[in-house]
Length: 81
Image 1 (cartoon, helix red, strand yellow):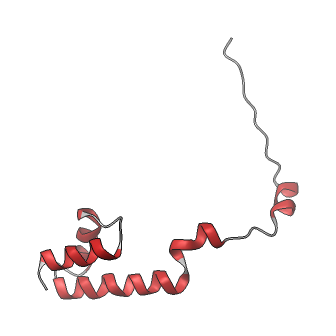
Image 2: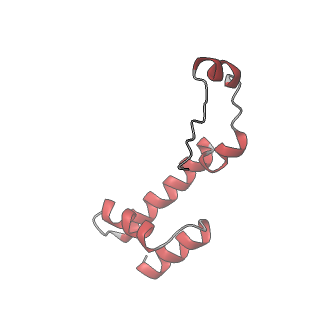
């Protein structure tokens, strides 16, 4: 697998894939393209298994009221005038 093929795989599977993301995986595997591609695919599988990409949509904060009672939220604004 060459650099162009790996970049194509990254861009197809993730809209946020860019040069720096690819470089991070390549550095982690000492610039071995096959190992970097395997690492990338394994990370995609892990993200899907653990719901990383949907956590903001799926998360339900059941203890919100208890949290706010323990840690009250205040806005202390001051005027410069």
